[in-house]
Length: 107
Image 1 (cartoon, rainbow, N blue to C red):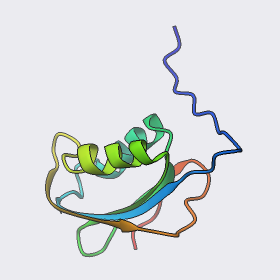
Image 2 (tube, one colour):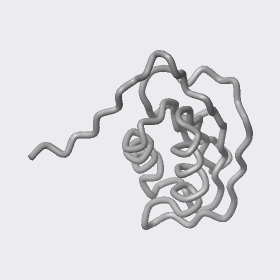
Image 3 (cartoon, rainbow, N blue to C red):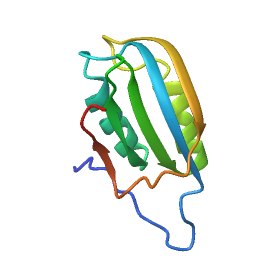
């Protein structure tokens, strides 16, 4: 049985929520970006994630509002097993999330 995730786009309903998130704590060197890509794709979100030179992780999540809230409020506040999230700031964004969800270079 194939457990691949299928995200079907509905052209009549574009993504209705886009946020930019900055996550602080022990979030670099603990596979946070790869974990974020996996979780965002699981929730059918568009956007990206990258490390920042200040030691934080930054991401843009765009998609169905409950999926965006799940990613930000539940998943990113905890992170992967080796992470220790000490702060998370989320704010509305008008950034273009692009196609799919990807990992970007450090900024």
